[in-house]
Amino acid sequence: MAEVLVYVDHVDGAVRKPTLELLTLARRIGEPVAVALGAGAAATAAVLAEHGAVRVLAAEAAEFADYLVVPKVDALQAAVEAVSPAAVLVPSSAEGKEIAARLAVRIGSGIITDAVDLEAGELGPVATQSAFAASFTTKSRVSKGTPVITVKPNSAPVEAAPAAGAVETLAVTFGAQATGTKVLSRTPRESTGRPELTEAAIVVSGGRGVNGAENFHLIEALADSLGAAVGASRAAVDAGWYPHSNQVGQTGKSVSPQLYIASGISGAIQHRAGMQTSKTIVAINKDAEAPIFDLVDYGIVGDLFQVVPQLTEEVNTRKG
Image 1: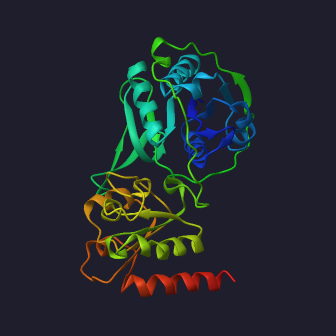
Image 2 (image 1 turned 90 degrees about the vertical axis):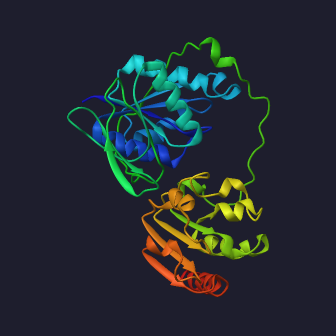
Image 3 (image 1 turned 135 degrees about the vertical axis):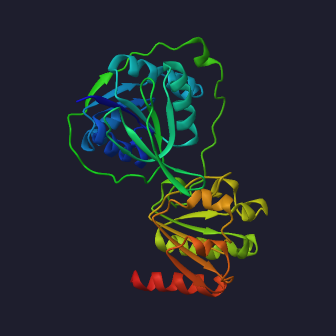
């Protein structure tokens, strides 16, 4: 069976959930071979093996942390040349998509971004994508070279599938461009205790109807009761009510949680583009004609200032 390279997204050896989802997808089309780079790369092996990685190619050079994405592209190119994989899978983060694009150019291959599913095909892996703000679902494959595919978080379940996970050292030769842009400093993101927006199983978002930054505590309270991430519409972000890093939409982040709750959001196409692939969508809006109701699974026509606190109270009561 052909091998499939999976780029490992980790922080000092702690593997992030989208990588484990990629291993599930990789097993559908071949044998997963993980590529872990940077400090703690070898420490990822146990978790990766538990979820199906037959091998882990590790490289811990300082260049991966000291410079931007080019050293990682150099390493993935070396892995492709060493393995000759059936495909290369990368998480669909901002960095992941830049790495994938650069790699595809390097190896002369086609690229598919933001896939939401993956299956084996006679002529190579077939990727499912949501197009035109999720109005259409397409299936496509790369017709030239080794397919490079980025996959959106929450597109596949995390499944245990114990494998060998033998750690091998990946030999990497860095090119002249690898050290062109150096990272001079880093500022840790302040932790809110909530899950990462793009990886969360539940997202609660607020929009123009929240009517001010001082009212976003209602959205946060509901999110915390559900163990959810907090999102915001572009209108709320542009008004300065919530940070841009929490924006959901075409010009923000795309999310595909199991449950998406939209509070005070009208449902403009810009916002729909970022959340329409959610598995279950609930909307709370006092305007019964709001476009958001055209795509929801459950809709509540009512004042969010009354509905959201009641919902939060009910969730907390049921939790005991």
